[in-house]
Length: 468
Image 1: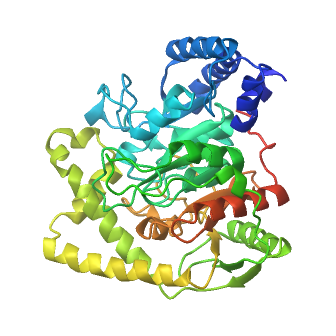
Image 2 (image 1 turned 135 degrees about the horizontal axis):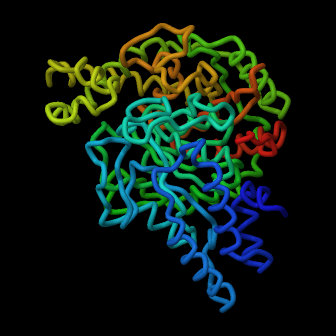
């Protein structure tokens, strides 16, 4: 295969070719790094590229293959890590001048697991400041461009992961998702992103955001996401919320299909505005599941309209953790983040506890819906990509910090801890990707993956590449 094809080759294939000695890890890593170096000035998906270290690790991986050593499931496969998470010896700057130059002294648990499985870290990827918003720019790293249109929103906060996955920066990219930050970049960039059940992948240190942030894979194929999730998952003592059960055999479950399943389709969750082109593509995708043998019923859940008030309260309240930075750093922070923090000033502990009771009732109502349905389908995001210097598209209501108005479909399932994926389902007339969201009951990650694989087979997309 030629060099560009190698950059877009799935991890499942790369790992097999490496094990059979048809490809050397050093060839894979060197080819991907050269592609990254060619694309980065325009795309700006990486905060740091660790080319020398990656090439040294690839040569060691070559030697392990030649020596007949036991190889991990990701031996020699390139991976990127989002810059909200620690990789020992590399900067963790979180898209913020307040953390510029900080070097991690230990790696996150899932990073250790990826490396133990043989993966080779080639870069850390960009994020919005502290992961606060869904637009692909930060004060520190600037704009990360959507590979399908320069300077347009690639989605965030896992901006570089989504852009890198779409642009062929290797097959595996780690993202995280506190209100859609895996699924939004997947939607905007035309790749697959899975937010697994909360606790499936341990977080360390545990984040102070009321258990809403999930790590997960961003890939160009469903099988790659299954493989990456398999490696990253499992309980760990450093995360007391991590699920005790070991991960399922996700690759084996990809063959399960959706025949006989009862699936809810909600085009708007009873309240959300959706652009017509997005709505049409998502409705067509929902019909595909009926063609695959599932029973699909359109619903308008009563809990849906309760979400906007809850997310806006809690999103701002949890940003108060950053308020001590304002005295020194406000002028160098994202103005929208500052506005979001300021909007929550004055909230009381009594108010927070009352609102948390409302949130728990909302979560319970979501789980009651999944007592009647095996899966739920919605748009992943209400809009296609728009200029990345804006918080909202021109034709949407403007606000100093509220980007959530076009992202009403994702945060409910952060609150409820359900697994949820964004899978490409088509392009607008302007050539911009659109994602379908597939949500499963809590801890039914394998079912979300198998439904995704069935849709992928019916409506493949991985052969479509942006011209970076």
